[in-house]
Image (tube, rainbow, N blue to C red; front, side):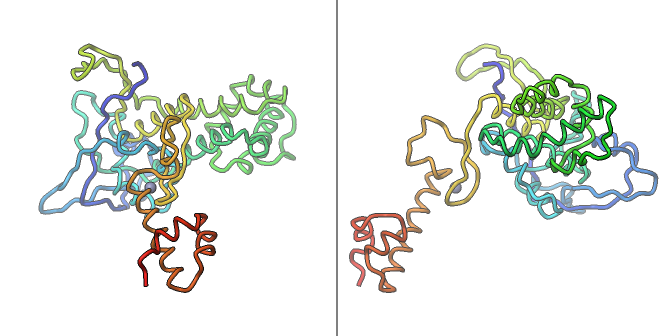
Amino acid sequence: MPGEIFEFSWFRNRDGHCVVAMAADDETAALSGCEPAPPGTMQRFISVNVDPAAGIGDIEQYNPLKQHKCLFRSFAEAETSEEGILAFADTYGMLGLDRENADPNSPPLLCTLEPLEVWHREIRSISKALRLWDMVQAEDAHGLTTRLSPIISWVDADIKGGSVRNLPDPAASFPDFEPDDLRWFRTHPEVIDYYRAGDLVVPAKMWVQAITNRHLESRISPRILWDDSVRKRWSLYFTPVNLIGAIWLQFAQSVTQEKDYRRCRQCESWFEIDHYTARTNRYFCSNACRSKAYRDRQTRARNLYSQGMSLAEIADELGSDKTTIEGWVDGMA
Ligand SMILES: [Zn+2]
């Protein structure tokens, strides 16, 4: 089926990652997609840990999109501190920025050096797009008005040559507002027309679309691939060239398919809600988490019982019923 993601596999370094500071030369800057810094300036990079004796060590191959249905949410929520970014890299690997500009016939095997600046920019962009999308999904008119109105009225006044000095800075209403966004609003007067007509949902959707397309650019490649397992024929697929492309593609899929997500009550990770999922599984990401939550409740009930709480009180406390609690504490002295 077109639009399907085909077997994207990625690499992570089991020896972890670190932050290094170095003077970036033009070649590193060009490969990693950041602005060339003035000569002599130190820049901070995420690097894979390399054992000087053994070289690059333990590389694990895995399938991020199959294993993590909400990878884009985890990335959007990644802490932008150096520790937060290192934790993400240790779990999922590097973003693969140098593959965007690499020779397609001999891409680098392992991406070893990526500017922190680009990591920050990507996290900011996806969390901005996700916040907008969540507001649209939740029909949060108040949120959309608070965040979008100041930006659009600013651009509107600016285009018409009015005074913008008395208007609030557009970046103040929307955290992570970037110069690219301003350029985009300026070149899309139809967004302002929708706004004047009292519609903020369409401008928000158009903005999400623009941000997403900007970040998919040069990171997704169409391929025909032979499907040997089921269909025994060629199909057309979108394949990410790197992890950051896979993350944006997963976000794009989620937006176009209007998927729902929920936070697991046990481990707090995000999971996708399939509308056909049995109702019992709707609060937990996995059977393991569901069983763990069940065992935790039992333990809690037994503890409360041994502290002298009555069955009715425990049932009340745990939002359960007396018979269930009685079964759990049965046989306790
Ligand atoms: Zn869980």
